[in-house]
Length: 172
Image 1 (cartoon, rainbow, N blue to C red):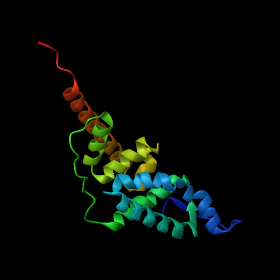
Image 2 (image 1 turned 120 degrees about the horizontal axis):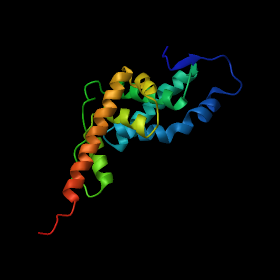
Image 3 (image 1 turned 30 degrees about the vertical axis):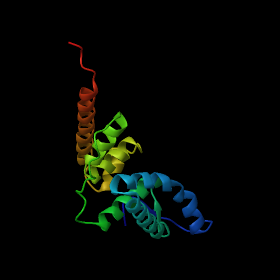
Image 4 (image 1 turned 180 degrees about the vertical axis):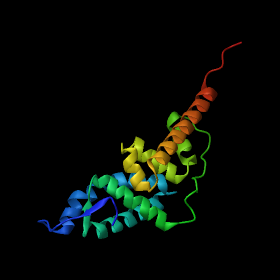
């Protein structure tokens, strides 16, 4: 049994109703996380489907011991690992020259390995703790910290380079 779930005794209400009320409300957030791992929308949708299939099966014998969202992200990362054991280091293809800070950040994110992208997403967008992320990604908290530091440095470097390139040149 995962450390992220605990057995639960019989509870009033059908399991399907409870799953809808407690789990399905996080569908959009999990899809946003899947977009960090998957190369395109179709792959992200398939990954979300596998995630909720796993969660549904797990939910009927165990319930999340903490945050339902963190529990779901654990299923998301697990489904991602199962889908393609050889492709985890694949990065998204680079886009053309960025014209805005948002495009620079998007391009910098796409250049990161998917596991680093999801780590950064879980910390910065979802506000999960390093301990929760470590549990989700099944690595020590120190590795999470290192991934976050390197990812933040990468983003800062890319933004700095872009700002240098877009800064108006002084007239001579």
